[in-house]
Image 1 (cartoon, rainbow, N blue to C red):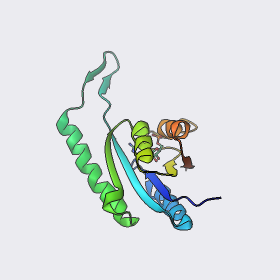
Image 2: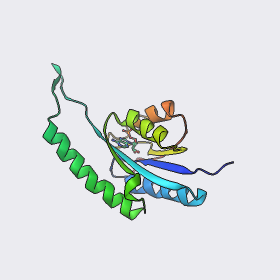
Image 3: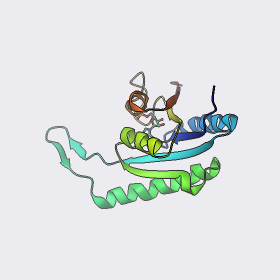
Image 4: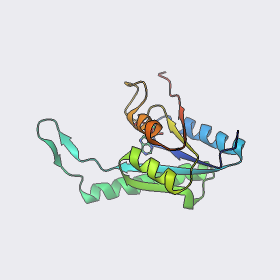
Length: 147
Ligand code: AMP
């Protein structure tokens, strides 16, 4: 089996993200590959149950979310020795953007958690499921167990 050369960790900064990052880092070290990080600020409009998407995300709120995410991405990058040029912060749909970043940067393994901020209600979270079904490279879903 060939070594993975470029591993992309998709992080949502949820409770278990350190555990998932440790697994991604261990994979990168084991394969002597490079590790990159990506976080997507979701730009979905706020939805009212009765009227549908009535309140679009205001640009300042998006800016604030991007600023906060930038700080958290920098902290994670420093902790796991990921250089600045391989810490990507994007705006849009997490699944679509994770796959786009992976394809644009010749990633051969995407690492996600089996579940993120939305909890353990599903067998596999929706982002993890979407990435698993649509990515053209391998995907490692790190199992997050219910404590
Ligand atoms: P979910 O499918 O939303 O429960 O999340 C599962 C995993 O997908 C998380 O543990 C992350 O690895 C990844 N993920 C979810 N949302 C994002 C996001 N906004 N940016 C980057 N990765 C994400």
